[in-house]
Amino acid sequence: MTATCNAGNGIRYDLQLVASWIPQGARVLGLGCGDGSLLYYLKTRKHAVCTGIDIDESCVAHCIERGLTVLQGDINEEVRDYPDDVFDYVILAQTLQQIYDPAPLIREVLRIGRRGVVSFPNFSHWRVRMMLALTGHAPVTPQLPYQWHDTPNIRVITLSDFRRYARQVGFRILKEVGIDTDRQDRSGKRVRLLPDLFATYGLFLISKEGP
Amino acid sequence: MSEYIQHDQQGASVGLVKKRTFTFAHPPASMTLACGATIGPVTIAYETCGRLNEDRTNAILILHALSGDAHVAGTYTDGDDKPGWWDFMVGPGKGIDTNRHFVIGTNILGSCMGSTGPASIDPATGKPYGLNFPVVTIADMVDAQKQLMDHLGVHRLHAVIGGSVGGMQALEWSVRYPDRVASAVLLATTTRHSALAIAFNEVARQAIMADPNWNGGDYHDGKKPDLGLAVARMIGHITYLSDESMRLKFGRRLQDKSDFSFNFDADFQVESYLRHQGHKFVDRFDANAFLYITKAADYFDLERHYGDGSSVAAFAGARARFLVLSFTSDWLYPTYQSRAMVKAMKKNGLAVSFCEIEAQWGHDAFLLPSDRLSGIMKGFLDGDSDV
Image (cartoon, rainbow over all chains, first blue to last red):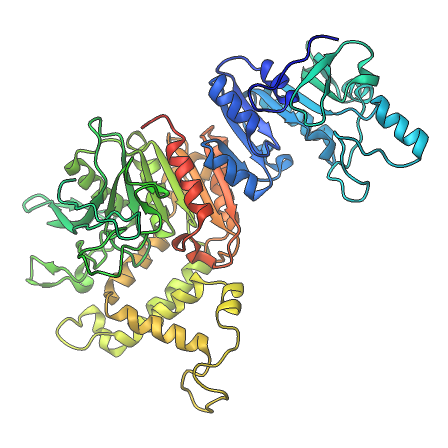
């Protein structure tokens, strides 16, 4: 485990780490971009050419008010309109766990972008395992703060599941980082030792299967 | 500009504005229209607010809808209690910020609010054109606006902004003169009318032409086709509202009575409202202009003229950043039409933002004060480094 990184720049720790993977001036598409904090950060700090898609009217309005280029729509549908390889990076930051049918979306991500960035809350974190094992209740954690009946997260994913899914669907994992963040997700640290157990989130850089 | 006295009416008014005119195509020169006919001279009414910067990069052209005019914001006199039609949107610190931008409003070719149209005098006869006025298109309106921009020394517009028929003009600008438009805001509009929209326009035109006073468009010496024009306006107002907005605004409430009159007076509030709108309209609008402008809107077909039927091909030459806004309750130009143009823009790799704004007031929503609408407008216009 390495030194704690403080969130001096105002965006969530997992988004800071995603941002660190994006080079200057990259063409970026953010799927499920929410309030646009990552895109705004990439636009202002990295001069990235950013587009976002979100289904929520108030999120989209907020993003456009911030000067971002954002479309309102269903990401599963909207990704289909883009030509091949128009983006350098397509980001699915904490969105995958809300997707009904992830494989077609991931294929589209890697068709329209050279690289994909996928992050999600790790369902094999020790606290999640303990809660289910000891209390018998569906886990509720700072990263997954919902009851089973009112959660937007319809998929529970573990780091290990995602690796296996990559082999099944047929995409490459270029980089993988497990992180452990505080309750507000403002600061955190990379988890080097047993990330499957100790990481609250997993971040993956993916690409099409190479030749 | 110097003729504007900054007059702080409600804390954020552009103050006094002045209607001006620009005339071009003086004979023997003329303007050639899409239909092949030529006209001249052509006068365009316009108003401006804010100040054109030294680089001439901060101009915004606002394009009005069917019955609008050049008077977008501010007032004509000090005691004037009726500001321009988009006063909530245009002014210091507002969605379209006149502290930052030089805003130009113009009246469209074919209208009757100061620009050349069927009610203007035909120099060949010395009498109003009437139906001798050639059928104009959205492209013709935009060509006339371009002449005005040249006259004002504005080569490249920071933005063209329009709702409804004004949105059609903004679309036309973005594909007809792509190097002169940095961004375009398209509100509650379409790249081509649906059969439904054409149908409503046709019924409205028939109402005018069925009025005996219309007299083949030659009514300038006698009684005007007021009844026909009023009915046409009533039809228009139905399409500008929505099922929900009419239910909230009127329901089945009766107008100034507790029971039915058992005759054909206006019993219901909605009847009274439509009659009022119709009567109000005939005082300010020319019946022939209504025919010409609705026809221009029906003829507008971006796919056909620029893409050989394909919307993707139609936007192939466009370069602008786009903001497309639709309204949930707009049944005249429903959201699916906005989504279709957004899709075509995306396929061309154009930067486009799109939001379907929750609004119960139907097509007219873009004319009603809304913090969300103003905020989005401001963010989009200021979010670009072009200024």
